[in-house]
Length: 429
Ligand code: HAM
Image (cartoon, rainbow, N blue to C red; front, side, top):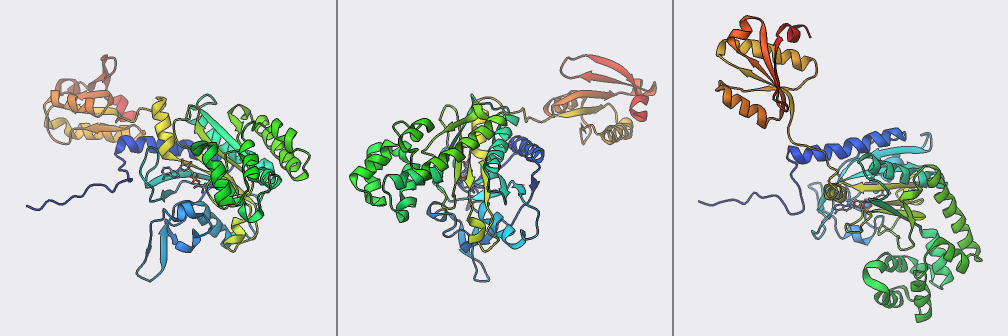
């Protein structure tokens, strides 16, 4: 007999109820926190015109697209990130909307990535964006939402660190080091990987890819010798462009302090972000032990809306993925128990009492309690077994003698304590 392999595609997940419980736990925390900051939820289609991502997102993501030609000969792609869709949606509708626009979304995204820990081919991502405000208060506000979202899930500054930088500051420093305007992006991508690839390789790449001479490449790599804000100010603060970027950045850090989040935040000049559209403050959140990939990444992208044909509106936001976050929460044992549970299991002895049992179940459910019972006639022992595997907190036993007296026995499954109760309490309650 021919057997067909219907296994799951690599990089995709099934969500059995236990996994779904974890996913819901994350989503509910995200939605609560976004709501507290006044953000409203939106969504868009999972399939978009391919063109939306080409050039806007940058090479890395475009190389990972699930793209195809549909039956109407359109070049389309499964969305690999939400930001271009947000720009497209607002491009069509932002005129006349009160600003700033505070929107969030929890889309499922698709990237054909090489599979590795923390990287799958689909993931859910909490996207939180403020559109229409150029000041650093907006940058601080979105990072506050991200960190509060993590706090809501039980993580503190000893568990997660936000590493923040500013592309304008990095650009100013690069110009000071002699990088030409058209080589800035190439130089960013080297800096983006400096931690992983090391100084020597980065020095070589800066010469080969960013067109720097050896002295300029040395100067850039040297920036990371003493990368604290004070050291940067001391060495380059007399250049106006650098001083301006530093002032803006200090204001950003002060705002985060005032929001009570300073303890989470580290300045880190190596944070550049892989996506092409960022124009200002950028950040990534990592587990404090540095074992996992980024939990969250975002920043300011002031030109994207205009690029997709909308109003020229400044924007800032982030995406937080469910995959790395779930791994981190699991490592730290901070996931809730998502095994099954019901408030009641009704055990019935004898067929005559079945209608009574259904009536009690109906009344309990009408009060908002969860109730299960055996769907066919079963021995009492089997029904108790079923109650256990359903995770029932209490079992209500309907037996002929007690029922005749208008009573039933309730057993607390955790303590084993039993008491006789009047059935009238269920009928009236
Ligand atoms: P991103 O850095 O590409 O940013 O993704 C944000 C987060 O999504 C990552 O830090 C990671 O946790 C998760 N993530 C990304 N790719 C995968 C994957 N293949 N498997 C599992 N998790 C993944 C963006 O997408 C930007 N559009 C975020 C943004 C919103 N910027 C401004 N607004």
